[in-house]
Image (tube, rainbow, N blue to C red; front, side):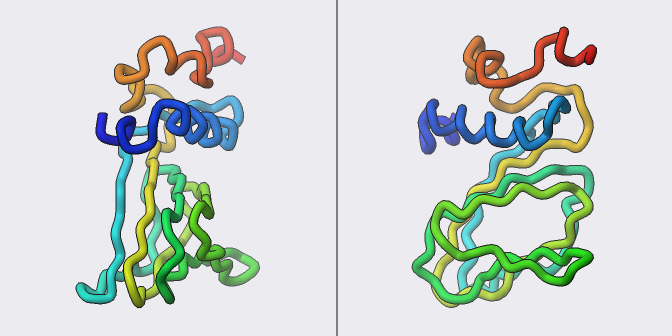
Length: 144
């Protein structure tokens, strides 16, 4: 409910559509929505890690800070995400990533889906009929 109030229905639908389009015909239910704040004062750093069994969509909400780079470790070397408000990334369970220390305050919003099909999306009851309209595969789609 808080996510819907914060984002609004139309922006929430756009986020879910972007997330599901990235996954193709697979449909992994979103089970967490997280607002994160990284600050220098409490030395909040996110060391390199993987997300276990999850696919994550991360949106940077501000860019009035220094440092805090989100870096992905790929086969071709590190990839640093541009630190601009609105920058969005989607990564799978096995992608190694982390955030550097921040000078100032960095805000980001993350949607997390289990990397397996089935189960109920946390927004399913909240959105009701709208949920199916924005992209959840129908029974016919799931049989393909």
